[in-house]
Image 1 (tube, helix red, strand yellow):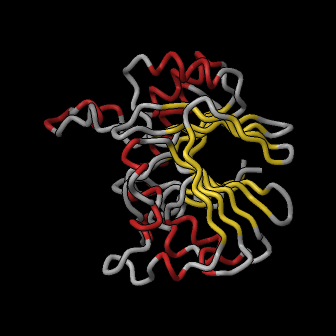
Image 2: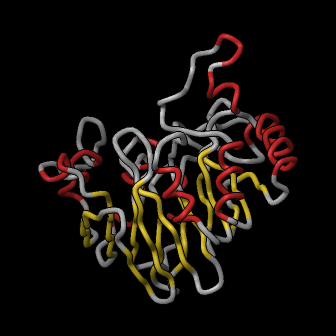
Image 3: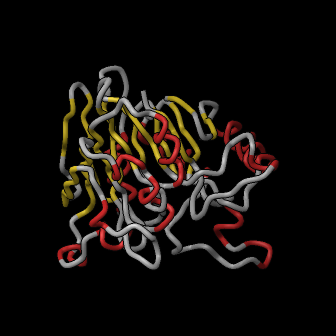
Length: 269
C-alpha cells in the first residue's frame, strides 16, 4: 500500500477551507515490512510518521530539493534517535558533490539543531534516472522528469500494482514521450496538477505559468489515455486552491476521464 501523507505543493496551508484535502506538502510512504518503510519526499506530511515508532529503517527518496519537498525532514524524529537507520536517495547533481544536504537542513540559525546532534545512522546515496532498487517485494524505478533544477520521477512496483509518482512535472517537452513510455500500463499516475488550464496559460489577464515547472489536469488526462494508465490521481495542489476549487477540478476532470481522483492527506492507494 502507498499512503499519501501530504499532497499540497509550494507551501502548506490550513483552515476550514482546506479540511477535505488537507494542507501538508508532499510526502508518500509505503511499508516494506513491520520494521522498515519507503518514503517519497519529505514535505510537512512527513510529520505524521513521527507517531510510528516501530519503524527502524527508512529509505527516503527525494524527487528534488525544493523546499516544499524537504521542509519536513528537520522535524522528523527518527533523525534524533540512536538505532534508527535513514538512507536518503537524491539525484546525482554536480552541486551536491561539495554540499551535504544535511548541512543545509540542520544549520543554525535557520534551524536550531546542527547536524552533529543527529543520532541516527544516516547514509546519502546519489542516484540517477534509470536506477532501480528493490526492497523485499517492492521495487522502485527512477526516471528524469521536467522541472526547474531537475526532478526524479519514481515508479513504485508492488506485487499487485504499479504506481508512478511524477512529483513536480511540466508538460510540453520531449520528456513527455518518455513519460508516456515510463507510465505505460501503470495502475495509478500521481500527477502534478498545480494549475487550472486557463491559469497555466495566463488567461483573463493573469500571469502565464508556462515554464514554472508544473502542469494541469487536462494534460494528466492526455498522459493516462496515451499510456493506458487505469487511474489518475491529481496532486501537488496549489496552496491557493481550497476544497471547493479542488472539488470543481475533480468534476471537470471526471468528465474527460472517469477514473480520476483528487489526492488528499491520508489517502491510501
